[in-house]
Amino acid sequence: MSAREPIDAVLMDARDPLARYADEFHHPRDASGRKLLYFCGHSLGLQPKRAAQYVEQEMADWRRLGVRGHHDAGRPWIGYHEHLAAPLAQLTGASESEVVAMNSLTVNLHLMMVSFFKPDAVRNRILMEASAFPSDRYAIVSQLEFHGLNAREHLIEIAPRAGERTLRTEDILAVIEEHAARLSLVLLPGVQYLTGQCLALAPLITAARRAGACVGLDLAHAIGNTPLRLHDWGADFAVWCSYKYLNAGPGAVGGCFVHERHGRDGALPRFAGWWGHDKAARFLFEPDFRAIPGAQGWQISNPPILSTAPLLASLEIFATAGLQALHVKSLALTGLLRRLIEQRLAGMVQVITPGSPAQHGCQLSLRILRDPSEAKRCQQRFTDLGLIADWREPDIMRMAPTPLYNSYGEAAAAVEVLARALQA
Ligand SMILES: Cc1ncc(COP(=O)(O)O)c(C=O)c1O
Image (tube, rainbow, N blue to C red):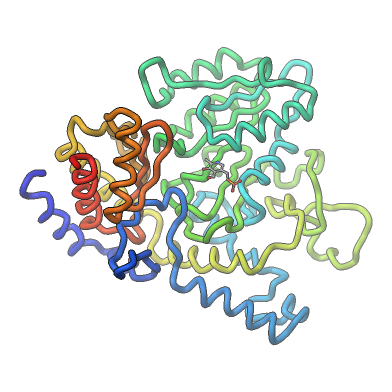
């Protein structure tokens, strides 16, 4: 490491206008009480301190009010999820009626495909990335099979070029063009889960729609991480989970975006439930379904208040800090981490996440340049030394400094830990 870098990290922390937000979170500690270097926000975000208070408020209202809590709780349960619409709309670049917090990511993906994957004799193919998170592929293949189709003929999977790790925009555009007449749905990630690559969504969405396909996005690794403009980009739908950068806790309630142009389309097929039915008439218990206009019309069941409360707590922190300011810090923080890794760990690791600011979010993915068993031992060593990052076989380490609760000093310390783990 150059002698200047640790000093840079200290200065950067001293000048960081968002530094105080770290104290909004519980930081895991080791047995001796020492704060661990937590770089796993891409997997499970830390617990906001105020989350327990938000959950406890609902527990107290439930204790105190029983069923009357639906209407008389401090935040009446009947409309609880609506408190999430404004902050989610801000994070996704959507209008409030285009977003809804509900279910979990894969469930929402299935629900969206019911509406937006409508294969016919000509358009019956789905395009996705070859190394997508497996749940997306399972969902897509099972949807194809549900329609009597099969992955071999009807699933197009685009991979990086031979010898490359990340996708090129021009290659995705070329595949869209090649299959234009047959494409029914294009599913893209906002940020690729393994490599941390942020895709150029605007041109890809435009091209896919021009080809006549519907476009869906998996924003698991993008929401709360990178700036999104879902409405303007024109995606048909997007789905996400809230346990990563949104810090809403394990298995927390996920979310969904449906573009305004579909919000009142009664002809779209959908799997309906009473929570998506016309709010004013919900308790008239009418037999025929009339969807609430907008994304809320895709809800099925009444929402899980106790697992929605931490999300509300967390989104309040985002609303105060502001995604734009967080993104500025994120670029500086991840940029520092990359520089230190490249200086200090040259020849030992290779950063595979693209370097251009538009092509990454918080996460850096590193290839450990060791034989596989040694790489695995290295993972154990950095964990023992107090660095919480994660490992994807055979040789990828993912680490994500998150601007809400990680500091520049922690980024410098993490690189020192990695150096010790790799040199041991
Ligand atoms: C990119 C991506 N898609 C889908 C999922 C599945 O999410 P869920 O279990 O909430 O359905 C994950 C989970 O980590 C993910 O990272």
